Image (cartoon, rainbow, N blue to C red; front, side, top):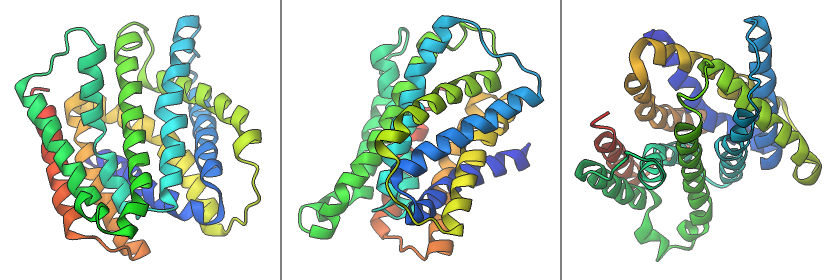
Length: 290
């Protein structure tokens, strides 16, 4: 199982590298919608190969529309747009704020979820870490940092979207339907794939000049990063439990930053390292009781 966990962390961490390479030859919308469609096809193939049955509950499919929008379509578009402007490692660091947003959404929207002292401290520490990562002091004095702020806020918008989707799943889906995680993931991606196909004529038909690296990166991003990893994640959850599986959140930024430096030659500022450590510390406190 450690091998599967390592593969999971590697693919999800490398997703930010794949996005950075893919947007060189493709538009952000093409990258985002392309990975969704490829992921949906991959999971549909897994469903067919394993002879799983698609859900028949109408309410579940309606809930999956909300999940698909906030867990796939919106965040993938935001991350792909940000990839044109930000180092892949920085996007990976900001992605680590997902548990903080998930906690805030859970406290507001879910019964039985309370903002305990540890959670409040963790969220505040995480917010400080985000400010350090962004380089909030430099934003006020440097035109270069100010120009990157919208892309960084887009990454935070993407992780907030993840939090909304996870909160919706917990309130309306988890424990209510007798389907295994692979079936639920495939259902979610199937809905997202339909939405992506509907959006293609409006936002993804701009001229492009894809090269081999862009195409291969999109294939890896879709088939692996948006498809096969769901199966791997299910195996880790089954073996280690949800808490153990959630520790991948701490590994993804490390992988993302390392690949950005090794493959793309990206620089890594000291304030980003310090901020990343602070964010991870906040996430640890938020998830401490879990």
